[in-house]
Image (cartoon, rainbow, N blue to C red; front, side, top):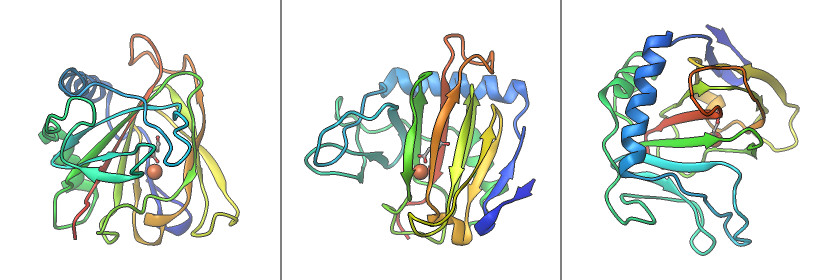
Length: 203
Ligand code: SIN
Ligand code: FE2
């Protein structure tokens, strides 16, 4: 485990291949009920390059009109999000060091050319709880900065099975995904990268 600037913790290769395969199966189950969709940036309505869905009592969504928020149902199907699989709740118990369970698990799917601009995760009332992030499939270049957009940043690769915990001051550090490295994992049949982020929303 490496502790990075701001107390961000990186656990390389935390999940073995079997655990990764099992998680992918669980995520496929979630996606069958709550299909991936292309989110829109607030205001401009510009499509993001990642596709998203959620599981949990709350899911993170965004659209042109109402912007970033948590809601208990899928924006297209209007159905409640599927439950967070117990395996993910176990990971939270082991690594989050926080007494309350996560309410939301955002599922991001990155195709070969998807990325995510530098941002802070700040839509939760509870900023004392960490964000726990699981990487599956192709590697990516992950960038982390400080608490101001202009602070210096550093980048490192996240590979399949890696876990990152953004806690303490690092909870609201700027971060993003610069690029995907296609063909670096055989986990997902059709390539790409899945990122799961578990969050506590209500304090
Ligand atoms: C995110 O910040 O929501 C995603 C981070 C990642 O894909 O690793
Ligand atoms: Fe984020």
